[in-house]
Image (cartoon, rainbow, N blue to C red; front, side, top):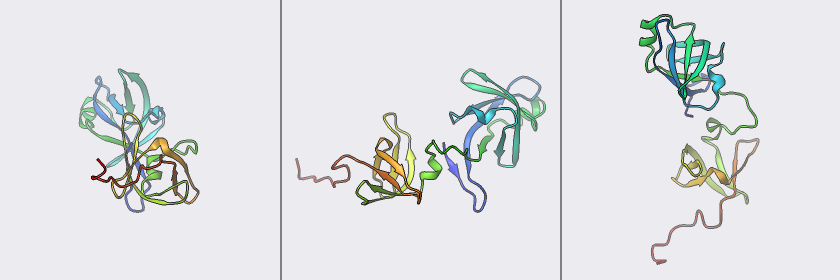
Length: 169
């Protein structure tokens, strides 16, 4: 999931895209880039560059969704919407760790030693990686907590941040 903030505007998270039309009435095939399928539930409002789209109906279709939006009527309009990126505001779920809440946070180890600031989160098959502003990487599996002030506490194994000594054979 990627985040985009626009000045004083609310955070917009990319949640999917319109791939192509489906049928003649304006339905479209949508690929979600989130596991939160409620993003295409009826009455959900998604943000696009020039406004909003309101979901009228949706149903799963070959790992994607066939969606009817109130604002897209007819095959021509559906064809014009091809490639449209869909955004939404963050969901309020205190039990979930959101990438947009981590980026920019200070990272400390369990002893309070500062390790840097989170530049991004990189997807990785074994474990997503916290990318620090100095290029350091911390597997998300070492994440302990995020404090009320936003500081991220990690518990990395001994030596993870030790400099590499080339003469150490």
